[in-house]
Image 1: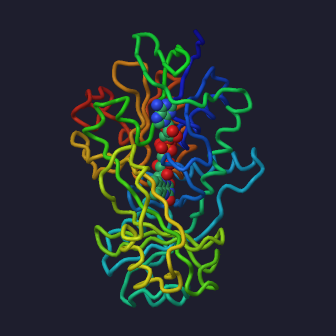
Image 2: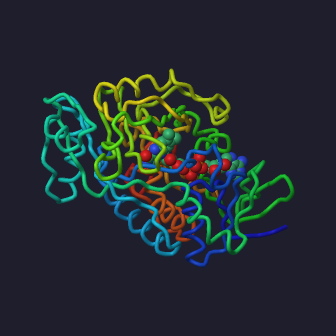
Image 3: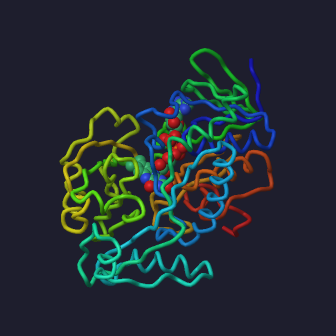
Length: 390
Ligand SMILES: Cc1cc2nc3c(=O)[nH]c(=O)nc-3n(C[C@H](O)[C@H](O)[C@H](O)COP(=O)(O)OP(=O)(O)OC[C@H]3O[C@@H](n4cnc5c(N)ncnc54)[C@H](O)[C@@H]3O)c2cc1C
C-alpha cells in the first residue's frame, strides 16, 4: 500500500493551491482529481474570474485578497506568464445601494481613504458603453484584475505534475481510521496521515453532515457580442457589478479575449446538485442579464454568442457566531484526520493561493487555527471552540 503524509482530494483551484503549498514546504503530499485544466465541469473551469481587492461581501476579506495577490504574483513569476490582467472594478446601484456603501467601507476598514462616491452620470462619461441612471451611486475600485483561471489552474498544478504527485482519478471511498485515512481509488488503496478535502460542489458527498449547511446552485454565464465594440475593450471598459436590486446582481468583464463581453448573474440560481452539469445552458436563463445590459450597458448588449454553466457552493447563515451566509469553510473536521475547504459561494477563485496556504498550515502545524469566521464552530451543529470561549 502506498503511504503519504497528506492527501489532497480535489484539485480545482483550491485543492491545487493547497497541494502546491504543501509541496513547496517539502511535505510528503499527493493530490487526486479526475478533471484537469480545460475540463468543462468543476467550479474552477473556464478562462476567467474576477479578482477584487475590496469585497463588499466582507471587509475581512481585504487581507485575504492581498495575501492571494502576492501568491498569484509568485506563481506568475515561477510560471513566467501573466495570471492577472489589471482592470478597474466598477460597482453601481440605485441611490443608497448597500453594495456600494459596503464596498467603500471595505476600503475604509483597511485604513485607506475610500474612493469617491460617484453618480451614474459621471460613470457614463468615464465608460462610454454604460448608460446608468444619473442618480445611481457608483464606485470605481483599484486593485482589481481579471484572473486567467485556466492558466492559473495549470500553473498551480505544475509543481505536483513535475514530481508525479497528482493522480488523475476520482476517489471512490474515504475512511478515517483513527490515526490515518484510507483513500480508495478504482485501482488501489492509499494510506495518508491526514487528508484535505477540497471538493467544491461534491463536498457533501463525502461529508454528508454538510448537506444541511451547503447549498449548490446552478449559475449560467453568457458571452455577449458587443453592440459598440470600441467601447467594450480592456482599459476602456471595466470589470463591473450592477446591484440592480437585492436579488438582481449582474457582473461582467471587458472583452479581453475577443469572445465578447462575459456577463452573468451573481445572485444565486436554482438549487441543484453536483451532477447538474449535464443540462445545457439556455438563453432564457440569461434573460435578466440581457435585460440588464440593454437597460444599463448598451455598448455590450448584442446577441449571446456562447453560454456556460458553473456551480456555486454556498454556505447557509451561521447561528452560533452569526453571519449572513455565503462565507467560506476552512477548518479541521472535528475528531478526525480530515481538513475541509468549501471556498466557493461565487467568489473563492481569487483567494486560492491564500486559502491553499491556510489548508497547508492546518495540515502541517497542529497549533494553527484559521480565522474564527472560517471555522465550522460558527454553526451550532459543530462542537464549540474552546479558544473562542464558545
Ligand atoms: C459561474 C461562476 C463564476 C464565478 N466567478 C468568480 C469570480 O469572478 N471570482 C472569484 O473569485 N470566484 C468566482 N467563482 C467561484 C470560484 O470559481 C470557486 O469558488 C472556486 O473555483 C472553487 O474551487 P474549488 O477548488 O473549491 O472547487 P472545484 O473547482 O469544483 O474543485 C473541486 C474538484 O473536486 C474534484 N472531485 C470531485 N469528486 C472527486 C472525487 N471523488 N475524487 C477526487 N476529486 C474529486 C472535481 O473534479 C473538482 O475538480 C465563480 C464560480 C462560478 C461557478
